[in-house]
Image (cartoon, rainbow, N blue to C red; front, side, top):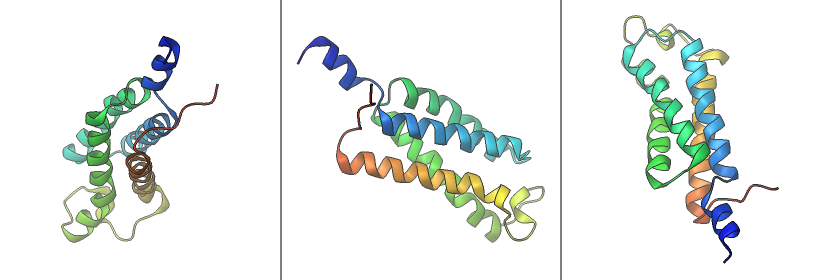
Length: 127
């Protein structure tokens, strides 16, 4: 394999870049939503460095963190419904489209990670 091909094969690819956009979207929606819960704000902020790593140099650790953060975002409305906390924006009745969007994006992120795991590699970006 030539050095250029090695560099392209080792670099970021389609699934990782898409997952980075999804992680950024999850974080942005949670932060714009004005999450008052410190734990969920911290998880939303943790998505940003994960997105940077997915964009530039995705590795096993980055994908693992991506899956963990996506699981937290997916299950957050379920946990909030079972154990409503004071000041939690998801605890005030049925979820609206605005509050379910981060969970849907996180589900998409999990799908991308599962697709990446099933393939055993990422898809190269078209030039």
